[in-house]
Length: 514
Ligand code: UD1
Ligand code: CA
Image (tube, rainbow, N blue to C red; front, side, top):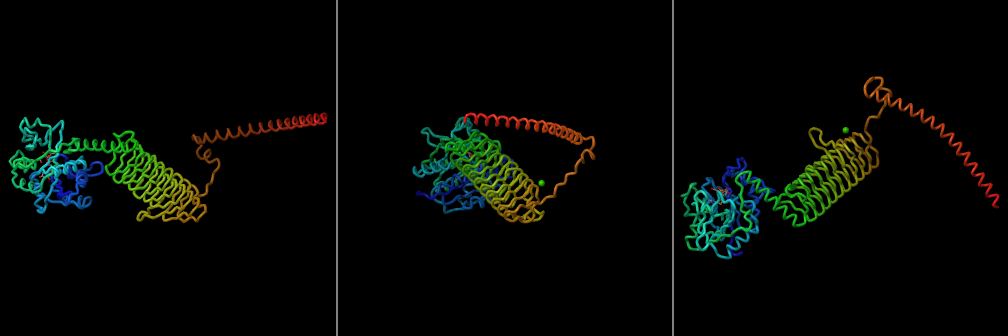
């Protein structure tokens, strides 16, 4: 690349129609803000500078940039006097900028890096002083029209509200993406007036000014007009989300990911999925989530920043900031809170909630359990209804369960507590002291049965009747059994006699054959 490049992103506008306290460019769309998408696309241009013009919500936008795009430089446009004024403000802040200036609106999140690169390369190779990215659309309402001369060369951009009826019929529109020669741009910006319907300095007027210098100005038409779409209100934003979802899902399916219902599968642009993974319907994968080959995720699953290992199954699960090992099983109806780390071949089953929990290889937490602030070793079985009691009302405490432990159902493990390797915990125990290796920990009241209590104390209730019926039935059964065992005894005597006769007959036959 011979020319130094500078990117200017316009993000000072209010975005009134969003009706939001959040600046429009910070609204989220499948894994990034609108501005984040734009900066990601321009990031591949190899620019020396990425300048973001901020104004409305400047503090929020600047804070966002500091956190997610620290190399971008915010320039304040205190009064929003138009797109031309915005670019002028940016260039005034950096008087040393030369080469190519790429201008992009902050609200066009569908732009592809490859498209921008192709446009800027063509601009530089052709030696044009301005190139505008254009789109042919069915409904150009509200957008700037690309006016061409008899030879088909770009002559001007006319805003919708300033256009003649003939110009309104043009369906080639301005996407607000441009490449300019820095010096020519600076010159033209200095000549802009606000003599238009809105009384603003329009960047679009720069095109006509540059055409009048006689040097070449070009249009770069989008092959996929969708890339030029912006969002002015939340309905349009939802429309963009659906399109971006389709784009992401199509790319993933082409790369080998199975998807049963792409229309209900919402995957952030930041998510990575390997071939031969399957994503079931109604699933949302967000942030830094990744899914390895052969894994099955969904249906009805939402994962944010979750690493899913090869061949794992994650069904009807809500999870964030967690790791699911290869071949592991999660759900249905599991809730993985931050810090869950399920090792290979482990299981987190139905109605199980986990938080800050390391669960070792092959260990199983199958049903109705809370595991918080715990380290569980390998090949451990946690019985149904076990609660890791981690909170004393003030502090959180840690529980350790070593390899090979078997925890019976309905156990509470009152932290801090350690269950050593190979120990067993009796069902229904409340364990608040360490259990030595290989021991049985049992901590529950001894059972006492008070015979006949229901018939005495709850006479006439359904229970008493059932108990009485059971007593009668038991008595009858005992009588029948007694009678039957008498008969069986008789039969046994008969059989014994019969066998004796047969044996005698055989002996006689043997003797006669000899
Ligand atoms: C602009 C273009 C129009 C094009 C359309 C594509 C102009 C005059 N018109 O119209 O030809 O078809 O985009 O979406 O450029 N901004 C600032 N400071 C300002 C004004 C705007 O930073 O003083 C920013 C906005 O935040 C936004 C971008 O510039 O990101 C475009 O501004 P907007 O008001 O949305 O322009 P449109 O009317 O959509
Ligand atoms: Ca209990």
